Image (cartoon, rainbow, N blue to C red; front, side, top):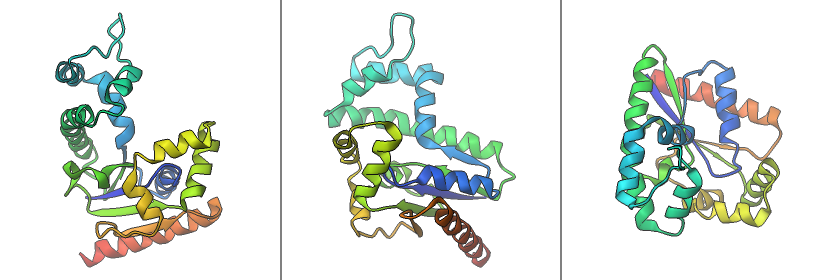
Length: 207
């Protein structure tokens, strides 16, 4: 089994790439960002630990987790964010290990994450890293149209992904094994995904 990480900044199209991989046979897919949101709800122990560490309540009167309260607590507070990550990331890694065991017969597991390269806690997890990228302004325009959000609000969100933005501006990262520039049509992206999957298979064979 090999773990293929697909990463990219806001509006890059990484989810589209993952969907195309799924349609072409790589069906064991783990969406890290979605699983983090799910763990807040599913893992009462995790949420309780976060509340204790931050000394605040993150649920409503019925005991239901309120993401808005967490976002407000960690906004512009790097120490609080680091505290949350120190609790969430080990839980996420454990959750992923369970996912791997449930999919032990698969040749490839796709791990989708927007921030994995910016979080050292995940060093060593990927066998292959695929970067999905596009020019910064194209990414911002896509995200604005997709989310119905003001373009400046999107740019503000993008500012939280400094490494992804630097990569979009031409910086390289030695951890990236393959890159897809998603600056064309869906059909062109599909062709690039098929070529990428073929090249990754060839690399597996060499190993």
